[in-house]
Image 1 (cartoon, rainbow, N blue to C red):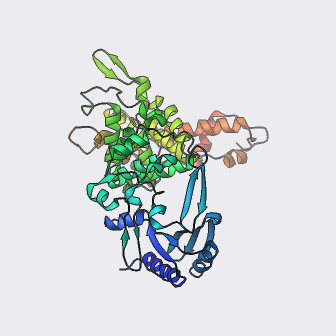
Image 2 (cartoon, helix red, strand yellow; image 1 turned 90 degrees about the horizontal axis):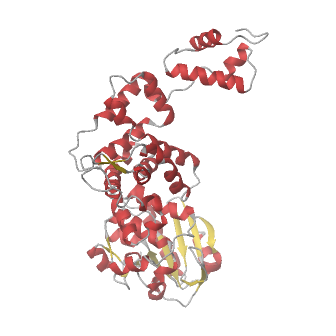
Image 3 (tube, rainbow, N blue to C red; image 1 turned 90 degrees about the vertical axis):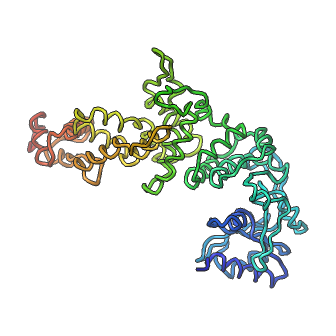
Amino acid sequence: MSDPRLDLVRRLAGAFRDEGARAFVVGGAVRDELLDRPVLEYDLEVYGLAPERLAEVAARFGRVEAVGRSFGVLKLFTEAGTFDLSLPRRESKTGRGHRGFLVEYDPTLGPREASRRRDLAINAMMRDPLGGEVLDFHGGRADLEARRLRHTSEAFVEDPLRVLRVMQLAGRLGFALAPETAALAATMDLSELPRERMFDEWRKLLLFASRPSLGLAALREMGALRFFPELERLVGCRQDPEWHPEGDVWTHTLLVLDVAAPFRGETARPLALMLGALLHDVGKPATTVYEEGRWRSPNHEAEGEAPARQFLDRLTLEHDLVEEVVALVREHLKPAHLWKERDRVTDGAIRRLAQRVDLELLVLVARADHGGRTFPDDGFPAGSWLLGRAEELLGRERAPRPILLGRHLLELGFPPGPGMGAILHEAFEAQLDGAFDSVEGALAFVRARHAPPTGGTA
């Protein structure tokens, strides 16, 4: 079955050819085609055409939006998909960070020179969609065969975001890092990168890499862990070898990430899962002590909240995601703890845990944590037990909701305000302990403990 995106790319290339221009598929699409991997997006670079004419021709195929009209970059929206269309351009470094560039369209630039501005040799190849010819000026095909990530030119250092791009490609492709590229990356400063651009690269690693650990290992190899101190502190943090024979917390975390990766298909929120796996033990460096001949990390799950927030705040302003991941970090040991005490665990304890964290996500993180060690896999019975108890108590909703609502108290004559809030909180705590399971029971609970307001119907 033909890819409608590729069909449109060929039609675009034909239209540009009719204008006396030549279009090439560039970037990751050529790499992924040669690797026989799914292509995420097709980008075209067009030679021999003025920016205004590029927009006019592209408009025949869909809606055109200027991303950088002054230097010849357009986004084309069609029924087949969205495409980036660009003209050859030069980049001159003018300042620090990812945005410190002067970018200009240059009609005299040829494919060889234009390809030098790309980050890696495997991303600098170009393919003619009409004739199929692949232009490879920098040894990209040889790097694909060697499974190697190598920078295209010394211009690599001008964009610090490329360090994170190498990180996610190492995880997604399973390629090794060329030593000279690692050495070059170690000189680069990531401190001024915009959070949204950094998060894009972390998201690609965590959502698409079959072995995210390889991306983290590449980040360390490039000397860039220093920009993520919450992770850097995991390196060398000791663990009790009886429980963690795999080594330090860093080694354990990499194993946990790889165990969690196949679980992404089991949840509607895979990013929260993977961030929870990445950060679950960030509280250990601050709590690890050597006591009575053993390494221990008491209360590390609660102490992990602050460093987890620091890491996430550096990457995203998505409040709900941050709170969800922090809850996973704070509660990640709870399934195992409850399992050990399962004969004494009350229904209220299950209900309260379900209020604090999504139980299905929590079990996935705990399963990955359990599996991220060099022990035989026992299937993690704590997880299936916890979800079974939750199913019995809460049904498929899994998180209990208050039965008694503010409107019920208003109907009884209680006035709005802090007093009403206190009664609602008290009633919900009693509900979690199983004191009632209906509105009638909730009203009886309130009447038995609180005098009705003057004129009320309680």
